[in-house]
Structure formats: C-alpha cells, structure tokens
Image (cartoon, rainbow over all chains, first blue to last red; front, top):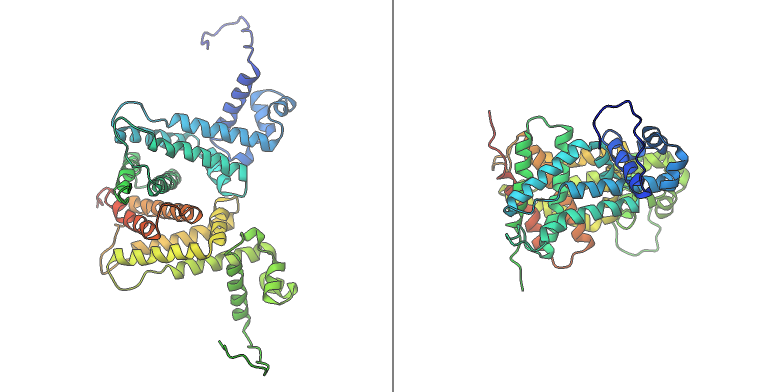
Length: 207
Length: 207
C-alpha cells in the first residue's frame, strides 16, 4: 500500500480472518512455484508468514485441509488469470487466454504439476479440484458468444474440448521442461490454432 | 489347447520358469480389466492361479516388484496390440492402430487407468513405465516410412505427437466412462483425423 521509507513505525494493518486466510493462501501458492504440494508443510508456511504453527492450524485444520485449500486457491487463480478478454474475435481471445495459461504454468510450474499429479493420483478430493478447474476452463468455450463460438455445443465437441485441454496441458508442461527448438510464439500458435482445427473434424450437429 | 471333455487325466504341461512367469503376468493383466493395480494383491493372483503365495513371491519378489512387472506387461501388450499394419497409406494404418487402442482401453479399462494414474502419481518407476510406453507409441510416427510420414520430425512435431497422444488418451478414457452421444466411429474419426490436422499447424522445418 505504502512505498515511502520511514522511521515512524507503521501500525500493522488489521486484517479480517478472511483477509488473513487469503494472504496465507497467496503465500502458499507462491511457495508452490518451486516445490510440490507434498513439500509444502505447515512449518514452512508458518516460518515464511512469521506466525505460529498453532495459528495456521486455527486457519486450516490439518495438513490435508491445508493442502486442499492451497490447491483450490491455485486453481481459482489459474481460472481468473486465464479469463479471456471480453472484446475481440473468438480466436484472438483464445490466444490471449492461452498466453496467460503459458505464463501461469511458467510462473507456477511445481505447484501446477502438483495439481495435475494430485488429480491423477488416488486422492478423490484432489481429482475433484482439478476436474472443477478443468470444467471451468473448458466450459467457457460453450458460453453463448455474440461474436460466434469456436466450437459447437455437442457431446462430441465437449469431448474434443476436454481432449484439447489435455493436449494443451501436456504440450505446455513438456515445453516448460524442455523448451529447446520450439519458440514461445510457435507454442502459442500450436495450442491456439489447434482448437478450431479440431472443431472442423466434428460431425455436423444433428437436430 | 484342448476342448474335448475326457475322464483321462491330462498330464499337466510343464512350463519353463519364463513361460510360467508370462502366464502369471497374463493373468495379472486380465485381472486388471476390472480392478485397479492397488486392488491386485499377491493373494488374489495366487488364488486365481491356483498356486501358493510363496511361489508367487519366488517369481515376483515383493508386492511393489509384482505391480511393476504387471504394469510393464500391460504396457508391452498395449504396444504390441496397437502396432499399425505394415501395408496401406499412413492414415489408414493410423486408423487401424487407433481402433486397436480403443479396443484395448475398452477391454482393460481399470488396468489402463491404473497405468495412467500410476504415471501421474508420485511413483517414479510407474511414471517411467508409462513414459516408455508412450515413447514407444509415439516414436512409431517418426520412423522412416516408404509411404510417407504423417508428421515431420522436428522438435515442435515431437511435442505435438505427445500432445496428440495425451488428447487421445483423455478422449478415449472419457468416452469409455460416458459414451452417450458419440459413436465409436465418430470417436475413431476424431482421434485419427486430428493427427494430420495438427501436423498442418506446424511451422515448416528449417534446415
């Protein structure tokens, strides 16, 4: 809020419990940039936040609840950061959204990998968080759009949209791990242009 | 081998240790059609095979080794069952291979899900088995083909081939779980035609 260096002690901002919780979750997500969710302990968060373990347990119950809360927070951040702009033709807006997704994976690599792996592992709640995020990301394509939709709303198209998202996730994660030989621009083009290319393979809607 | 009912006791075929091990792994993979790898116990296999737990431990060491051996066996079966035919144009051969993949997932659903989930979970050896299988499946596309290749061999194309495989896996698993509204033919067309459609988006090879 304030950026002037001063010797006068600044009164500590009094946060509501919700604000404090949000602040801790933001910190948790930031810590996930360079470590997996399993490496994110209550101890580490307490140390980084400068508060007691006891207070953290007050906010998050137990380690499992803490991990789920951080994952939900990370998924919500992913959804909001990749929201397409309101204006522009559908392909332009998809490209902006894909670019934001690449940036998100770039900045939150380890945490995002945790979300993906947690989803595929045995944990039903982690899978649910992941599937909810994926639904939110892909359902956008099927919202009524005054500029026209990139893909019709049919069962086959829903399947293709999820498949496209799985491909985008795989391609971006592999590229992040080994970017040699493929520029960021080429990656963005491949991921963005593949959705309309796949939509053209769909059977015509029958009704 | 024999289908005539007889009262004469048939001498039990003497198998080599390798043959016996293969027989037990075949049984393990068959049991995975309807259960996850975590539900496949040494006890269950021993009971189904009609042999002692001790003998199974003789063949497979411990439960972890047993699970890995069954997963490797399942991955090898997947690779061999989806081998494209030698003759025909590339798109026809891809279609035959994709159809065999759909059949494989159909017949081995729970076990295949275990392979996919095991890969994404924390287990490094399960991930390795999965990645090896995936490499084998996608590297085929880049082998020199007298009929021409569907996709050039560039870093971007390798990325797209893996992404296509991730999409195919996602789409086929979702379709198997909820097939409503999409016929098997439509599914085969979508998965098969998407590879050349994606290849068209690749930047031209530079050399």
